Image 1 (cartoon, helix red, strand yellow):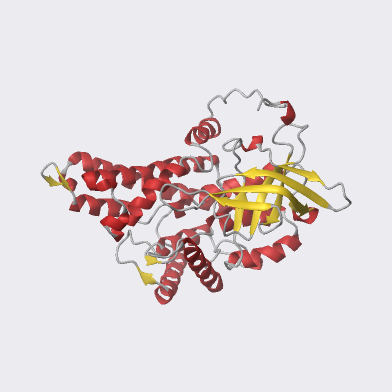
Image 2: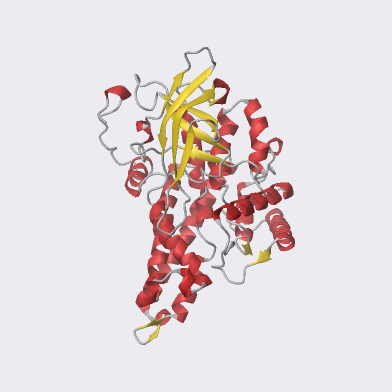
Length: 411
């Protein structure tokens, strides 16, 4: 790849920068975070409003087709916009799952009527979607999903949903959710899955926020107690739920670029320049500079992997399994940054942002959030297996459940 802007890309970058200058304020420092003092609901509304403004200006979904409300732009234009937006104090993107995973699945697998009804409101921030996948006994192995959807026996054309999901991001604010269910327990585990979408305000849907160590409640448990789903809300064919889910998961890997704060290594360098270590500045110590170099190299590597995936999409190909590497490296890099920042503060590293100051909010957020990233979307161990088998060509793990009906598996 040529990473220098072409004439067209340079013109697009100027367009992005001009619009952002007119609609947002530049950050005073790279680690500045939007929304100080706002409640979770207020941050959610700010994200909705910003998404709506971006969509109206043609930046809400740059690579989406024009008939679906996008710009019909190139993957590199998406990268350019993300780079430019990272320099501005704008609301956190709380639509990453909604627009990055769920709606792309609707593009491919839902009916034209469903797309016509839901894509526009989602793009403009009016409707938030959540992804209802993981369960207490089905996290990294989604083939073990037990939430069941059973055909109605009372004459209605639909299904009755019962079960539980967990770790569902922003379910408490979502208008709709895409749910993976088991519709046939008599076939192998991945063959008996079907996907539906549901109104999160439907009778029988209960959302319970999970309080995290940092006091936030980004994740939720969701319970389904006799929820009726019309068959018109089925996404894809009966038994094709895993195919729908794979579409979402492949798109999820491309969002890693939005997880890394811009110029994170510069933030670390500033912390090292200000901190004392062994009687001098931390930046003067070779061991500390080595940690800074590792942080820089990881961040650059993640950006290159993102570019590779976006380039594949631009050529009409699916992003490859090598993007799984981005998840492993990204989570570890954010966690390493948190460790480094806290180490540099000595005993003051255990203090919260409200005691240390506004500049500590990013460190605090990454410290608490990075550990969860090593679990979300598949644990490090599961993802490494995928990389080993699908990228490196190593012998696969023994699988004793292949071809065995789900109801015959040990649970």
